[in-house]
Image 1 (spheres, rainbow, N blue to C red):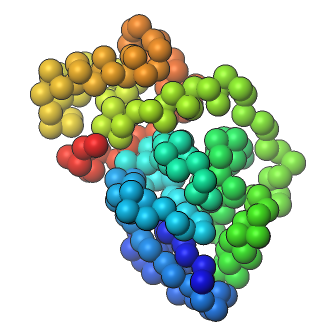
Image 2 (image 1 turned 180 degrees about the vertical axis):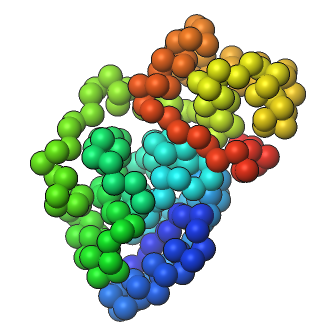
Length: 222
């Protein structure tokens, strides 16, 4: 029995992927999640999956943050990114931060199934046309990713808005929380990232090219 967790916020894609994979795997059990928070809740109850297929852009994931957080919390869980983004730099960062594979959504179902099979057999998999172009992630960025992984999803949202230049009261309005709560999150962010100012935090966020955390999920806080 092959157990997969598909974490993607598009139900039609999850349905299509499940249907396609069922034609290529004789015994398949699939669990679904539509946000980073939902994915973490599933894994809290059961992390014995053969592979997590992780979308970079689902609510709460904020591109690299979702991958970084899951790799920290569940280091033994095999993770492959499945995404509509085909940028070589993004692929390289995902692999550098612990993904075992990077599967573009533009691939046909047979190719996706073949990629998943290769990863399940222990191979790393990225599209052949970009393999020679992928650069290693620096040790400094790996160490930074380890710090970012300690942020809760809500702290990540606050950091993103700081990066966007919002004031504490504006962040409070965006997230539906009090300004005092924002200040508490900022204190925690400074401590976890080992910085002492908003400017330093912004510079670190820029190094990882952190992306928007999908504001429509902002009311769900961890």
